[in-house]
Image (cartoon, rainbow, N blue to C red; front, side):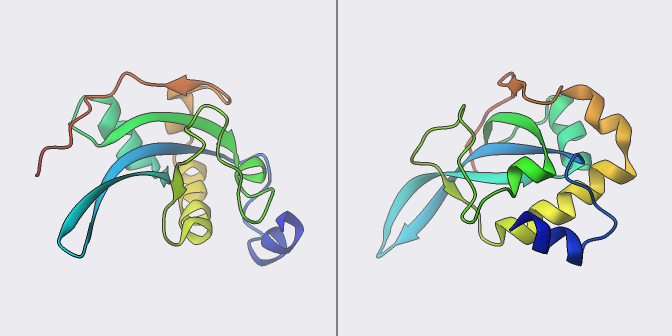
Length: 128
């Protein structure tokens, strides 16, 4: 999958950085509300705002190279995340877009080293 992706996104490279987060989301199904843990890419602007302490539904995040995030189809759940976590809708296209935000704003990459896990969020699932 990686080779095909990079042929269609020549501005990106396998070693470009991004942050994936584990978010708590709620899905309404037949009148019942179900909690779901979603894996989704966190754009650089959102990442920097979250680090300033705004409330967020993210429980944890990890930084990784784009080539690792998109190495397989379907993508692998990061080892630090629960095995039953689901990938967000449009995961691949959102991951590509997110990698571009870190490429345009490299300083956002300095807040979390590759392979590291971040858990110090102002976690909240209260309605906004």
